[in-house]
Length: 435
Length: 145
Image (cartoon, rainbow over all chains, first blue to last red; front, side, top):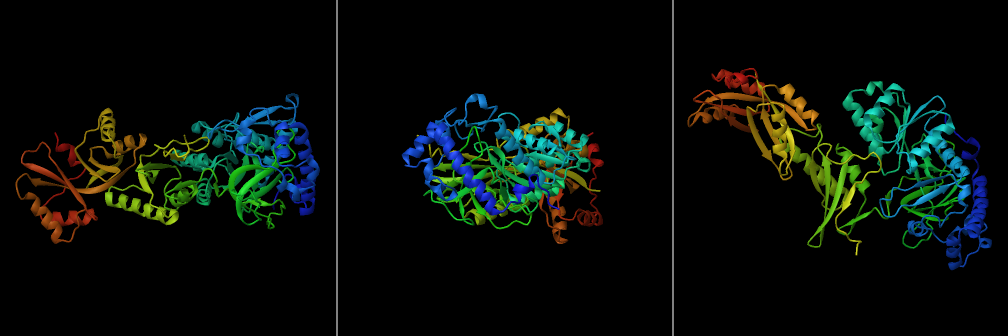
């Protein structure tokens, strides 16, 4: 039987949810107009005032916010409450430029943690569970979010943070952890380490909540099989709150957006025009209940599809697919769009480990793409022709998927840096965007 | 009967074979025979050692990918034409040779041959029937005394 953390709201009628969103939108627009000069200026430039916004149908009249705005307004420029009302900051990893800092009041933290508690409950978590939180703690939202969510559920919480795999496995076996929360690449690494140590039979895990980076359905199957668990996806971003903006239910068929706090839209990334449900578009969020750091029409750069089709789990929140790519992560190689997730799918299908690195170079004005893949015991043989034959098969499969030739380079095991936070999978040496 | 060969995956870059041999040196592992096969970006080193289990463990502990394969080892006379007899015998009996390499031991007048064939037992049977006795793993260290 499906369990809910906030049953009344998670299964509310669409009318009820839309009413919450209409009310919330009017309220947040008024608040930023009064308290955030940066956003007020943007509204004025577009000729919009709070009176123009009656509800969701007026959303398209409002200006977008992008990461560039957040950087420009750094650090305090988008705060809607004075410092005395705020109790916490969290920050993005800053891998793509200047850091982004988000602020939280106590109410904001409670809201965020409830969202995570809903995700945990949807994954079967109860107060009887032992939840191992192996996301990084500190500025990164992963650890704090799931930690708070686990407390809200009332589960025994193991604040492990990331790294120190020996200690992770020891606590997991000694304390009998039943739920693990970490990045999918770390989950894959943990599974590998557990098998290496021969302690698979001492693991009590039943579910895992994996997010903060892109992963594929094949990777999910592999983690589920190797750890004997059900693997749930979770989505979020620091700018909006952190993990738990949306989460998977037992149907594992898209992530339910916590719509009593966030309005989701998809837009055409080129024109900014809204696209209908069921079609691919860039995901845009309005975090209308946030007190300290509400964002209106924040462009995530994640490409996904929204659906309002009824879900068998009983939740009425609309669902989003996992990001199908990022408008800024997408590589254009020889004029062809390449998403790292496509390459990962091929690797998993061909039996290679999910640890890989994509290197894009440009020589004599021609692009070249190379995938470094770690050699494994299973893929190895004493015969050159056998190993080279497998390599050829992989090259052919990549060509079929991407439409362009992609060189494969087999590298020594464990020579690609293991991520215990976010994976850096793409190295673009072309420097196309500099200077 | 047969001898166990360890094959090791190496990245094709300067120093990788040196690093492997350094590891073997540190663990006092003596190579009886070695052969190197290469492709564009990787190589496979095949080695024969006395203590296969120990060597394999050392390699695994140091994150090398390796595999153990049974191969046929035979002693031949160290003189022109000796190889012809063995190879003709295998050929006449329909045994396909995947690869082969030779090594010398202390025994004067003898050379030793490693033969990688799909069916080790069948190949060894053919040799025995024709008066060639394959060398076993236990024979190995004796060749170097």
